[in-house]
Length: 155
Image (cartoon, rainbow, N blue to C red; front, side, top):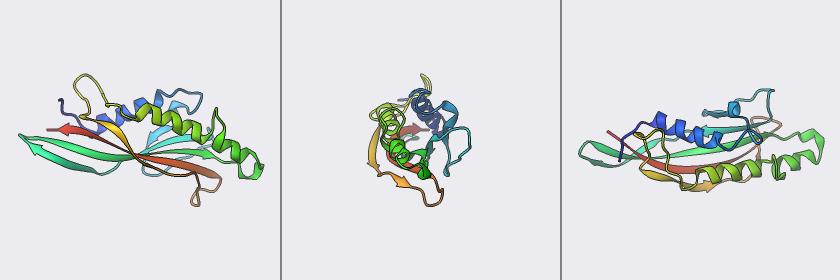
C-alpha cells in the first residue's frame, strides 16, 4: 500500500464531493474549514471539517492513521417565508436531505485516491449523523452533518 499525506486525502474528499454536480451545490461552495463561511452568492454550502488523526499501528516505519471528519450541509432557511423553510429541508431537488443523500452516496465505502501513488488504506465509513438544526449562531441558516472515518498510511 502506498503512503500519503493528510492534505492529499482531504483534496480527494473534496474532489469526491464536488463530483455531485453543480445543480445541488456549486464547486465554489464546497470547502474545508472549521467554521462555516457564508456569502450572498449562494444559499447552499458543503463544509468539510477535518478531524484529529490517531495512529493505529507502527510497523517498519509506516503508520496506519485513522481520522474522523465531518461533512455539514448548510442551507439558508428563509425563515420569514413560511412553507419555503420546509422546502429547504425536504425538497427532492435542492433540499438539505437531497444534498446529504448525494454526499453520502459519494463517500460511503469509497477508497480515497489522490493519484496512483497516493491512496487510502481503509475505505470511508459512516460513523454517525445528525438531525436538521436551525443554527443559533447563524440566524437564518440550517444544517445537517455526518461524521465519517477513513484510514491511510504515512511513512
